[in-house]
Image (cartoon, rainbow over all chains, first blue to last red; front, side):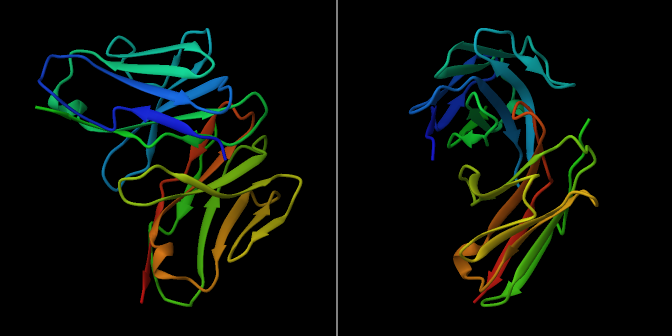
Length: 115
Length: 111
């Protein structure tokens, strides 16, 4: 299957700083990338959907100014958590899908801890 | 929009027994239904999927059935093994651009 990488896998930062998470599709062109947040023992919560070259579509309740998403190429999307606070600590997972209707392939996730 | 419900939320079975997880969806336009397995701290992995033009699909010990009329689909795992223990998510999609996930089922296979 398709491979999606995510970097970093873990990050610890101080409150008030910004953190950037990268999501890359390694062997296919990802026309659409998704960003999820997952709390322990809970389902995936979709934060936003981004199409290459377009502005991301955010889900209701997700602050677009706080969670900046950029999808500048067909293989890279970034999520920047701005002015992070302890409540932003979570597991962030990206996924990507190609041009045809196909499944999403997930990255390994980034565990963010804000102190 | 689409609403996907998944049951049960937790499931324990004895090794060797079968496990069944059920999902329902609300939008008749949904036509693609993947199932993901997520082990603790790891990414969800696609284990099987089915499209709306098919009623059943099987891959070794895993099978998925789809009832379009009733808008439900199920995951069946036979001859369960301890390594099948994980959280399983169903999903529904109509365009490939939006996936709606179920709330997950935590499966425990007891040796």
